[in-house]
Image (tube, rainbow, N blue to C red; front, side, top):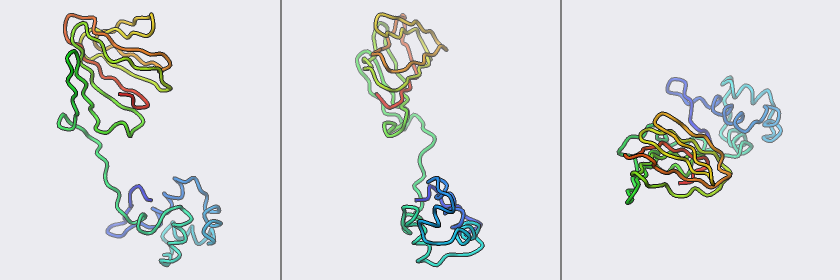
Amino acid sequence: MAEHLSKRGDILDIGKNLKELRLRQDLTLEELASRSELTKGFLSQVERNLTSPSISTLEDILEALGTTLSDFFKPEKEEQIVFGAADYFVDEREDSTIEWIVPNAQKNKMEPIILKLKPGSKSSLMEAHDGEEFGYVLKGNISLMMGEKRYKLKPRETFYINGRKSHYLVNTGASDAKVLWITTPPMF
């Protein structure tokens, strides 16, 4: 299915959309020609909008590309790019608050949160995993605890770790701490 449909003026740019779909599938014109039982020259002309395929020929091309007419022409739902406070999901606990700042981030490759910790409190234990994590201390003083090791961080300092060891954060300061914490894959 086309991720977005290109247009030339008010006309749908079928050739460009077919080429983008072919390239996303890492197919050469020759491979598409073989799959669709059409000539490489004809497909090249279609992609350059020098000729227009019949509906049945377009169906053959789309079938070879693994999609259908209805999916090819279906406009893609535009994904939300910018998120504000109204989009956040907030989980307030006794000693901490987690703000999920990108809704449904678990479907993405990474998941960012803002973690607020009261003095002396700690985050949940992050079990060992195959991903990576990044943290940026926005406010307060924290310690990243990994086994017996303690890494102290203050505002404007960061951590970047692989997830091979279980770990957690502790607010070691006298005031609230706030950390932007991002995991890949989503873990929160």
